[in-house]
Amino acid sequence: MNGAFRARPVAVVRDGDRVAAGALMPGGNVVVQWNRQAFPEGERTDNLTFSHYAHISDAEQATGGTVIVNPGDGPILLGEVDDESDGDGDAEGGEK
Image (tube, rainbow, N blue to C red; front, side):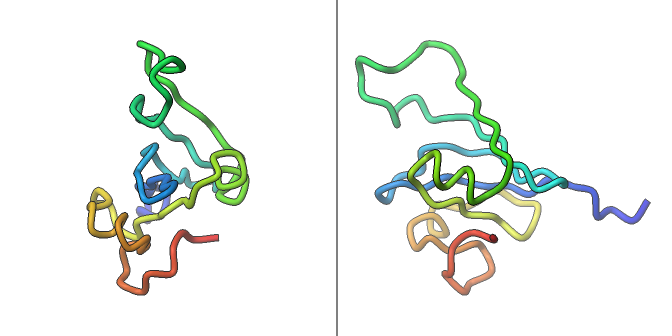
């Protein structure tokens, strides 16, 4: 196997806050787990909340945020989220 079949870490950033974290899957779909603190207190659930989107632009439209994709296998660091970098230093945001 060539190793190209892998998921890449993603974060959903909205208004400067990381509201969800997950993965860009090999087929291009995005799966995230939501940060419960991203919801108003009266709307939070005690259960884990996951969302599955067909592609990055679908995720951005549905979440109202920016999807940051890490080009490597490591986690997305807070500094990368703060400047909305995609992890490669060019600060252009998520991969489309």
